[in-house]
Image (cartoon, rainbow, N blue to C red; front, side):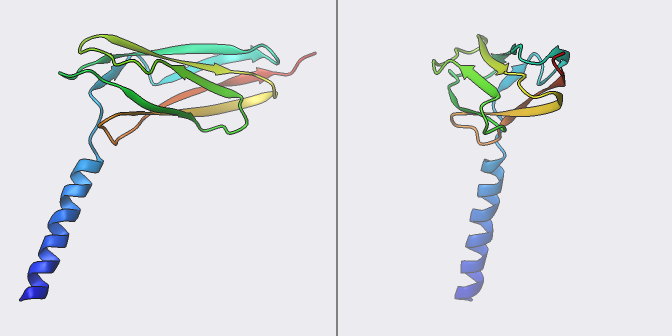
Length: 129
């Protein structure tokens, strides 16, 4: 009986962990994917993703990380709290150093929310002539 109760407690704790792990941030992005189209090699481009805090409390961006460890995709953001119904911005710069198609992702995590938001940029870098 003791083992049965212990097993039930672990299952209950696991269910709470799963429900908590999927908490989505209360934000609404203007877009989560941006296509630059064809861009010239060696000419950096950038896009600003904006969002609105739809929650009832201030929202703080915890981390913003690029899927590209080689520094071709560089995100920039404010660490200031975004008030309810206020706008926040995340700027993503792409260096366009290598010719060819590209798809890069930027993962955004907000404090108190474990479900990240993934922003995507894509396009084609035309080789320099």
